[in-house]
Image 1 (cartoon, rainbow, N blue to C red):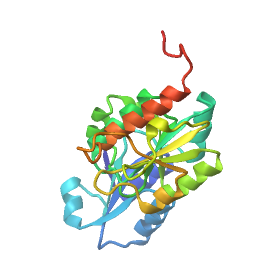
Image 2: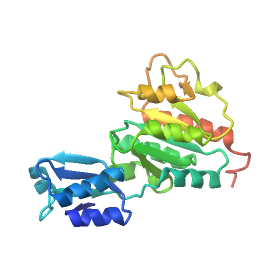
Image 3: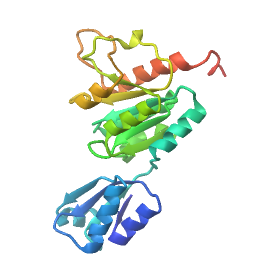
Image 4: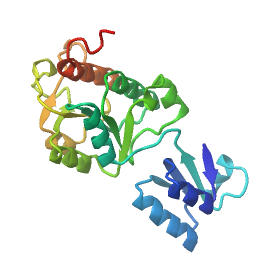
Length: 247
């Protein structure tokens, strides 16, 4: 959903609506708009500067040089996600997505996260696919069954999760260690990157373990949504108790 106007966007922000991103005229700079931009940045909302013509095309009517995309889902604070996850599971699994820009891949990962009871999916404020109708459709409803967190920087999220006692695992085909031989004892945070760029080097270095999936040498890597499903299944399989899903 699109909303436009400085007051309307400010009200949406103050009411706790999840703003996916905000487009701003790159030639506008009124005091009221600057105040709004300060609040948006403090809240971690992605802001993009565009020509006025783009705003005119997107929104018919008075937009006051600002148009916002309102997400169909809500993001929750990291602390709330951790609390909720541990209330449901003593060994929750979190998923961090680095530079996943394809909306269908994002939706498919969210579907797997919901299927295997992930505690939450964590997305960066910048450089990530938005929550679109295509994302919702690809998730097959899974997007409404898993907590979503948006953070300014994934690296800070990694450090925070480690401080909360979570073991951080990076999925990378460049590792010598195999997922199939990995045994975890406690909560885990899984980092997944795009097929094109992989996981950011600093995130890889910060991870406690780097694991690959044992696949045929004829194939270099798997689609990120497929890799997510395999990792999440393995973690899920190790932590469920016999009979948990027998009914």
